[in-house]
Length: 225
Image (cartoon, rainbow, N blue to C red; front, side):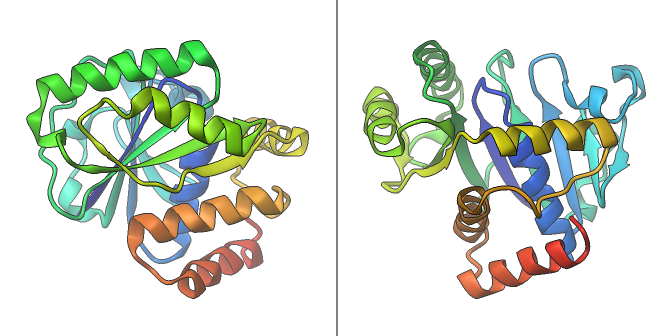
C-alpha cells in the first residue's frame, strides 16, 4: 500500500477526487482519508462525521479515520491534510509521496509554511524527503512558481524543481460545483490545462509512463467520468 500525502490549507477536494477517480478506473483499490479542516468530505456524501467510517464514493472509498479502514486492502491511500491538523502519526516508506498544494494567496502560503515547519520539527522522518509542489487556481503560473518556492526553500524538504500549475478557469469551477451537487465525478469537460496537470501529477507519483496515464484518463472519459 502506497501513501500519498496532499498537504496545504487550501480547498483541494477536486484535485483529490479527480486523482482518486483516475486511480480507481485504472484498476487500483483507493482510499481517500479526510484530514481536512472540519472533515469537509462528509458534506459531499451527505453524512455526519460520526457516520463516516468507510464509505464508497464513485468507485473508491472515503474515511475520516484510518482506524476504521483495513489499509492493507488498498493499493493507494491518499490523505487530504489541512493545516488545522497538528500531527501526522504515520510511518513513511520509500514509495510514499508528499504533495504540497496551494493557491498563490500570500496568507495561505504563510500558514502552509508555518504548518510544514512544525510538522518537520515534530517528525524528523520528513527531513530530506522529496515533495511535489502543485499550484491550483493559478493566475500567473511562472511568477507564482518562483514566489511560492522562494517562501519554502528554508524548510528541510527537497522540492521538485518543476511545479505543477493548474490555471484558474471559470468552467472548471462550474464543473466542480456541478459534481458536488450531483454526487458524481465528471472530468471530461475540464480544461485541457487541468487534464494535462492531472496526467503529469499521476505520472510523477506513480512512476507510470505518460502513455499509461493517458490511457487511464481516456478510459475515464469513455466511462463518462
